[in-house]
Length: 436
Image 1: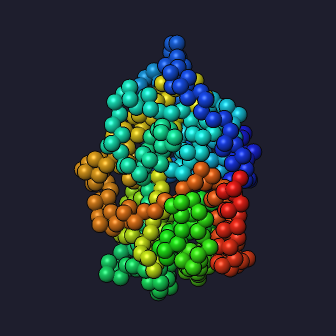
Image 2: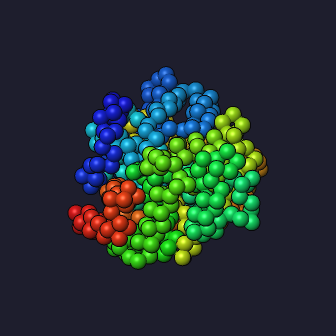
Image 3: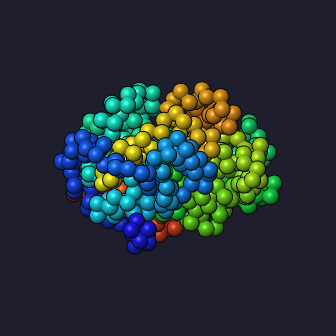
């Protein structure tokens, strides 16, 4: 069922999920938690379906294999979802609105838990957490908070992300790593073509969630915000407009790919691994790929640093993913066992070593096996990049906010409107959306 739904909604990413957000409610919360154990299989092996986006590393496969070995009566099958997070979101919403029980466990983007909880799509985990004495204080506070809504925990934080700058150390010496966006532009122009490269800089400029992440970094670096702390639309400010202008300048430059508006994380990291880029904006996961001789032509040639600063400093979009249980799963207790394993120390260690994902369990940053595989976890550049993290607009209608931003930012990059026009249009549309 789910694959048919994916094909059906794929062309309409982020087009209409919001009408469902306020529906469903949480009237069955206590019933769901209290009867979790009754959904276990009477005998034999329970099969669970775990869904997440495309994983280009070996981490998901290894986690599933290790869990299945340790739990012979519970066997997890991985179901690959679209790599585009917007299409992935829509596929979940379509299935869950139909009360599909096909998927048991799903990974959620850090901006989704409140929406899914409000819609009644996911199971609150508090009873499971309390029963098994899971110490949530050991997890990153921001990541835990992102999965909390109305006083309940709706997902377990799996890994934390922040945008950062990777650069070719053989082409950009440590003392010359750009500290501002203007320096990056100059460096990208000067180094494009050196060392067999084709591009001075790689980014994510396709009309999807990755474009929003890049935009938030530019806007925040110049002192702007999309929505302020009080929930007011603030995108049509001189500071935000300056950030949008710089985003457009970089995205339309002659040192990025001609088809830059088709690049997601996959296209950009593939080009960088092939040795085609001097610098790239990406997430922590890419480090392990860069060091993998089987797929990387730039092993031992890459450094990491905070993203360049604007007038107000460096800013990195806070990202990460959570694991949640489908409210309609027929195997809730078994699903919890997998969620607990995957987001516990053993599962997160696999994610860090095999996938280069930064743990949400803070003690794991002292794990020598993890640091050996991810030495940049202890480098100042990585630490500074995480400390510069800023959230995307915090709102219960985030998917609609993202859609509005994607459309107008894409038009600005395509030259169909100015940065000022894009900011004004986003302001108008965001205000209208927040009123509904």
